[in-house]
Amino acid sequence: MTAFGSILKELRQQNRLSQMALALNAEVSTRHISFMENGRSKPSREMVLHLSNVMDVPSRDANLLLTSAGYSQEFTQHDLSDESMKDVREALTYMLDAHAPYPAIVIDSHWNLLMANQAQMALTYYFIQHGADFPETNNIMELFFHPKGYRRFVTNWEYVGIFLLRRLYHEHLAGARCDQENTLLEKILSMPDIPTDWKTRTMDFGTAPMIKVNFSISDKHFSLYSTISTFGTAVDVTLQDIRLEHYLPGDKATRLFLEDLPATSLG
Image (cartoon, rainbow, N blue to C red; front, side, top):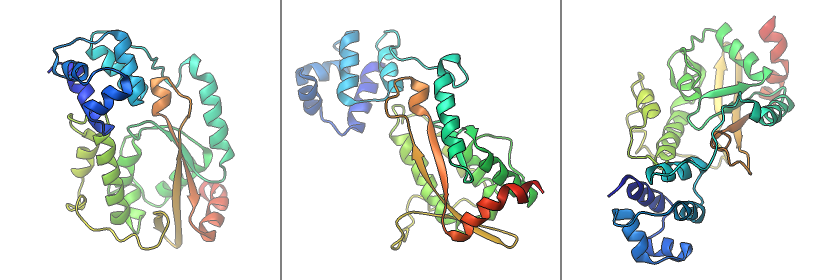
């Protein structure tokens, strides 16, 4: 099996398509799909793009299919700081600022922090004022799970942690190269006191419609939940990976705490 055939098979299976189903959707023979997967047939550039469209794969995976078949990439991948991304940065800045006085961040598909609003920075400084010793990383997951990071203030951290570990695990499985090591997950699992039964433990979600992260710092108790937004018409690889995460107060006490936070954290 060629590199292209292996990746095509992975993407097809991730979309829960049989060879016959993909062939019907692509309007080609099942034999042709089989031959492309086992390396007996080399696809044209047009066929690679056609299969990518039929499976509705992200631009990153479409580029991966193209390069594995020996063709140049179709979709751009610009850094967020690039001049061509100016409108994107302005839109993200507007959405971050508009969420004040509540925290909001911009992350990539690997949970690396790209941007944050003033409320997020004020909240982070508040944690530092009360003993947080964050590791030197911009990865939100590492900052949460590190024993001297957010974790030490989260009263339901195992509950939230298991949920996040499962998310990391399934996000990696959904990727085009799920056969490669999940380095972020492995790094977190190597940290102290991570639940060893995170894959199998039965979680009682009760009647709550969402998971809230509950914090306790000194005499302050507050809770947050989040929503995640993406760009609906993105074709650039970087832009498809970008996620905007808004944190919202879990109760009235948290709302009042966050509204007062800039003054208290700076003074």
